[in-house]
Image 1 (cartoon, one colour):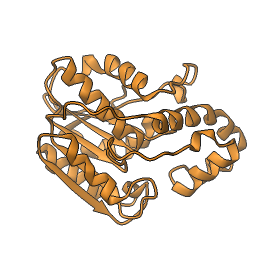
Image 2 (image 1 turned 180 degrees about the vertical axis):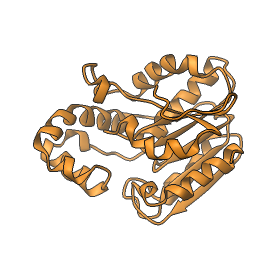
Image 3 (image 1 turned 45 degrees about the vertical axis):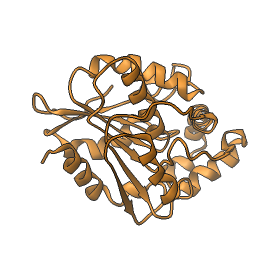
Amino acid sequence: MRHPAVARPGAVRLICLPHAGGSASFYVPMAKPLAPGIDVGLVQYPGRQDRRREPCIEDLGQLADAAFEALRPELDGPVAFFGHSMGATLAFEIALRMDQAGLPAPVRLFVSARRAPSAHRDERVHLKDDDGMIAEIRALSGTDSRALGDEEIMRMAMPSIRADYKAAETYRYLPGPKLRCPISALTGDSDPKATVDEVERWREHTTAEFDLNVYRGGHFYLTQHQQAVLQVVRDRLGTT
């Protein structure tokens, strides 16, 4: 896990999990303004950037298992999670594993641009050819347009993108105990991947409080509303 900024001792730890095809660097612009009151940790999935020599993981349950074990040393104090898109589902699964292991519940789960686990869609983007997947990514406007136009970069990134999409699209929620931590959901009002109603169903997955925050925009609404999103994080975690 990467810590891009220094936090003060005892600060709540916010573990950030990126979207399908994303990397830890996606959160750097959000991480630095939250310090020193929040200790931001950025998760890097295998198969990209500095972990590009490691095999990708195509199953979200296996990815959650691996992430939970890797993060255990980071769970020694108050911790919250922020997950965007696939990262939100992964954060949910890690929180479930914390409960199963008898660890204290996270202080809060921030789920961004992702429908609730119980709001399933049958999506098969991972079965498209490379051109089809690139068109899908371009439509979501979440990747630098220069990268999308660079054939070599996209060729290198495609295995991790396809693996992540497969993990997200083949995930199936198994009904079970609810989380004990509060959930804050954030979403764009025109996100093709998650309607507001689908996002609101996150309230079904916790016995604690739930709040919904809706912004103008699509799947990557948070790039246009960074300050508002950061303020929600600060307010919910009780920091300044």
